Image 1 (cartoon, rainbow, N blue to C red):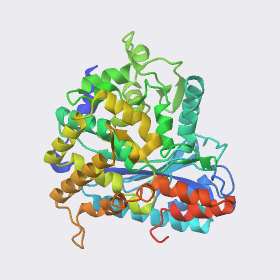
Image 2 (tube, rainbow, N blue to C red; image 1 turned 90 degrees about the vertical axis):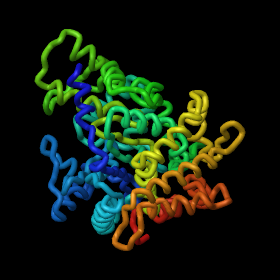
Image 3 (tube, helix red, strand yellow; image 1 turned 180 degrees about the horizontal axis):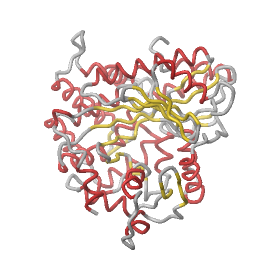
Image 4 (cartoon, helix red, strand yellow; image 1 turned 90 degrees about the horizontal axis):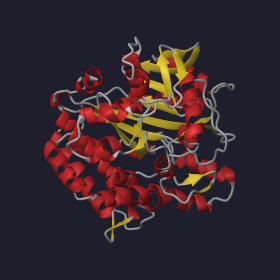
Amino acid sequence: MSDFKNYFQEGIKSSRFHKIGLELELFLFHRASFQRVTYDEYQGLAHVLNRFLPLGWEGVYEKGLLLGAKKEGSTLTLEPGGQLEFSGAPHTCLHKVFNDLTRYLSELNSITNELDICPIALGYDPVSDHVPFIPKPRYTHMASYWRKHNPISLEMMLKTASIQVSLDYSSEEDMALKVSTVATLQPLVAALFQNSPIRKRRPSGFLGYRNHIWTQMESVRTGTPRFMRNPRFTFQDYVDYLLDAPMFFISQGDTFLDAHGKSFRSHYLADNKPSEFLHEAWVYHTSTIFPDVRVKQFIEIRGTDALPYDEIMAPAAFWTGILYEHSVLNKAAQIADSLSPNDWEHLQTVTPQSGMETLLKGKPIIGMIKDLLALSEEGLDLRHKANPTWDNESLFLKPTKRRLEQTDPVKRSLAQQLLSQWSELSQNKDQDLFLDGSRSVSPFS
């Protein structure tokens, strides 16, 4: 048992060495047909990945198939439906994170333009009906599990895309304060960045349909367990949560076996049977539980839709400002503490549909969101991390801040903007061209 806890304790780092990691998932569509790019087709996802290799990326293969790439601490991977995920190398300042991201996006846009493919930044695929799985054994077992236990989860696997932020912790207490603050405030921040209102070419009835899907999934492995909203929770609490969660599969090297719904505890610990794969299995297991904020040897914040270029850095900037300056973190924790469990449940349930206009105690939550954005800006200013032109890290919050300053509720919501313009476009081709332009990840669009 102590080995499981030690895995998280080994993630403790001095605040001097705290870094920021960013992951971005994108949909790839053919411009001519606006169909999703699949793995095996001519000039499909395998070909897209292969085009990165002459640019200094090293291919990552499984059973002879090119399924990813890596370069200088950054990785490219394919999500179950072929969403392309970039995981940037972690850095101590946001400017370096941004430099890596823009270099990748420049490479991606060069490749996709030549192939007449458009990368789209949305939280949910707005047009597709059927999306095939990529040929990856791990995903096959995950899909089998979800079909049996929670079929809507297949939509999550195949049709959602997000931005994830990874940040460090300096002690068990620091981890708990950061995680509980994020977990409690997450519905507010998700509402700020909602960008997934369309499903199968029609308004879904939600501004954040991706967030809605997560509220419908299996509670034993998703959502936010109540103990994680308590700033006094411990590594052992999190270990116990993971031990009792059902496994997707039993991993043995490159082999994945059906776990038949067993928990990690019941399979590996019930008979004290040794396993040469125990550590590897534990690390895999920590990645197959999906709370809104996840603890590894860092903190992974998972609740934001994929965003267009102007705001692509904003979630990382927001959480860096909140969590990496102690005085600001304490203020944010006080805001989190002001939310009762009933308040949180209300926000978690209602914000996917109502967004920033959601009422809490008779007031729209946009006021709280603006307060949090100001706190984050304060935290970034206190970090004194400037780029060569002397802009500090709050630079990355400016597009979001300008959006929130709009008086028109439609103009201050990415999802509402998309819905408003989408409804005016009656032809599929017009809608496709609109998506290609408005949800682009090119800095030149």
